[in-house]
Amino acid sequence: MTTIDFKDLQLNDVTFGYQDKTIIQNASLTVNRGDKILLTGRSGQGKSTLLRLMANIIQPNKGTVELVEPNGKVVSPQPDYFGEVNQDSNIFHDTLRFNLTLGRDFSDQEIKHAIQEAGLTPLMQKIGLDAVIQEDGINLSGGEKKRIEIARAFLYNRNFLLIDEGTASLDPQTAHEIHEMILSSDLTVVEIDHHIPEDLQSKFTHAYKLEDKQLIPIS
Ligand code: ATP
Ligand code: MG
Image 1 (cartoon, rainbow, N blue to C red):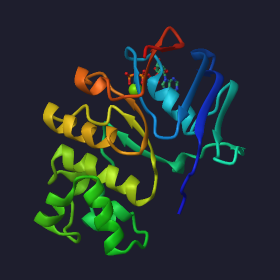
Image 2 (image 1 turned 60 degrees about the vertical axis):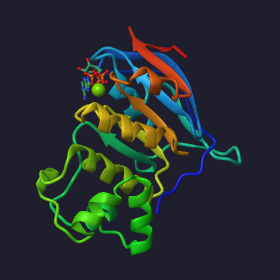
Image 3 (image 1 turned 180 degrees about the vertical axis):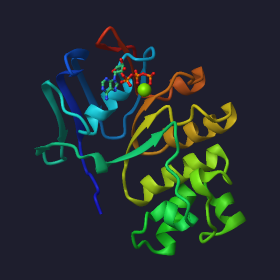
Image 4 (image 1 turned 135 degrees about the vertical axis):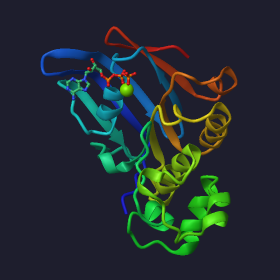
């Protein structure tokens, strides 16, 4: 199982463009273990691109993205270190168990622990671990689908979540509940979201805005 233990993730003076169009210029950011970082900015400013750079799905044209291990060793982050929660859910036409384990061998106890952490116990009690989820989770609520993705990250020990408008399709109350859970956890979180209510904004450790290619700290 891929588990990361890290002190921080650093973007050092990162410049990136698709083809020759620069999207992000000289961005620097340190994400400490346990930080909850909010990233905002208008559409097309490069927020999703920044998350892809953090996960090493794409690489900077200039600058570096580094993961610093607790002993100080510097490595490149790998995409599978991160739990991803996006606007579109990643749910398969298979059992609830498979949707959590993705076919890897976890004990019922481990699965139930992840379910509990992600607040998915009511669903498990209602349908059971071996109930079949329909294609794209059409027989689940939006909130349940998000919680499945979060429980999956817990199960895989992916303690670093990259959330790209992950709760955008949910009603405000469900989105709020999921934020309460995430923001009070020891997960490390970088989240893109445009609709964070004020009472939750103060629970993020830092906030940044992407504007005109610049990554600007706002708190
Ligand atoms: P939104 O809020 O709409 O999701 P965003 O801030 O996440 O926007 P990105 O998806 O990072 O923005 O895109 C930044 C810019 O890069 C946009 O102009 C987009 O058209 C462009 N872009 C994104 N992906 C690619 C790609 N694979 N190839 C070329 N250009 C791309
Ligand atoms: Mg985006």
